[in-house]
Figure (cartoon, rainbow, N blue to C red):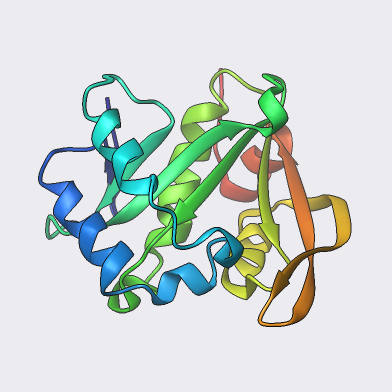
Length: 180
């Protein structure tokens, strides 16, 4: 499976992508300050990615590729607490130079458009200290639906866990997408 628009391509993971993930988990780690920093370092992260190469198709994670062919991160889909009625989407773009160029918005819009072919509602989750994801969720049209106060602690400060939701109808209106 491959999803594509004018800004990015989403595709399955390839063996050559693992080299980037090694770099992003060992050298260029700034992104971990935003992506659940209480979970890093995660020794099993690279193992799970390598295992995903053997599990085709892997609908849970798709790689983000720029028009120049550069692999800059991934989008993911998962069920909140295993509830198949609550599909959530997420994103990670580790390279600083790839951020603030519209890739994240484009990638999640494309993934959401795909999921809304078979769903009426999508979620995303983050924490109140992840300012980039909070802004992206709002720009995409998500609305806050649940907040757990002071669930996470980062650098001695407490942050809330936040769940957002958007309906297919809301998404269609905001992003001018028609579904038959």
